[in-house]
Image (cartoon, chains in turn purple, cyan):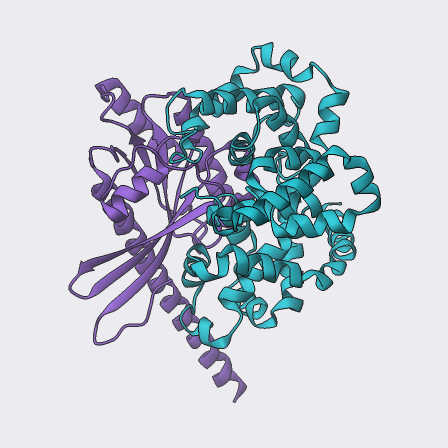
Length: 210
Length: 312
């Protein structure tokens, strides 16, 4: 999903899903990240909401991040198949003050992995967000549990975040983008290698043919 | 924000309309049986605000349901309800029309009634439970009628007007998305081609439109006018509004120049130009696209047959 390079400047377009149970703060997270604002009262998301964040990653890279904020209610999951298509990464959110939403987040991760993957067959990078950390604290035991969960379930990492107090919002997104960019580079390299192999094979077959 | 559309109508015209509607409501069965066309026309012109709640309940058949099931709502209302649903409903109460005076106060009357109506529905249809898109529907009803009436209005919308929209699996809404797209090909080939080119699944733009019957999309005066027609003529009104909006926003090459891409197009459809949603324009357009809707029943049959083939 990367744009063309011009004078060494590359622009990438990535689709990132924001998923997790109902009312864990997905929309608030997105609003904070994109607009740096927090709203106490937000409408429930029905279907999907979109936002765009443009990041000047470094002097020669720009990233356009499409954030797909997807309705959390169990009932509305029948539509996920459509929403998940062609996504490059995911932020999987749970609410630290509501333990059952962590199980929910793991379910979401599972569903994600069963529906999308990278070209090489690996899961797309996903970060686990322990949101609403302003309302409670992660104790050491929790931290090691989350660490373990990340390894077991294939998250690339976890952050405790607060959309309300603007804690770790940018950091978590940056972490994800870094991985997406790495994956992107790798897949470009892989493609180039494949292409070279194809070319070699072609020239071989050509030579035998002549 | 929730200004009524009738503010622009001269008071004597409004009073005349009220008299006509009162007359209709008082001999409703006769009107529906013999002069349905006239009722339809009057719904297109807009139901007077003072009688809107009553008219909606009559039009939907909620009134009859209520009379056939006397005491039912009270019975459901007195039951505790399934905690699984109550939890989700409670979280949604303050997220419906948060700027409307009725729903502004946490735990206020509006939110309490909303809770009662939605809870009663989960008890009425335990196998269906609660879907978040039902909350705005119930909230709009509650702005016009007491809780018991709103409950029967909701029952009618969920079972008669938009059957299956809120059920697990959400097949009905996906089916109607396909139908909308197929109809669009006739109404605006340009818009159809554009959406196809960028692989924009109907689910991406029509879910909220249809599931909430445009209550979260249109300006308030237009919501009321669309609902007046919707209660009289059914789901085809929702289709027509959707088609009009798509045609207006994506119907010419000039407009499409600015939205070359999936995201750009979806952005455009989320910020529909106000002139296309303005009540007079919209009602005019919606009532003039009707010839095409004769295609709706055969298409529905065809596509549901197609879906059945896919799933077997």
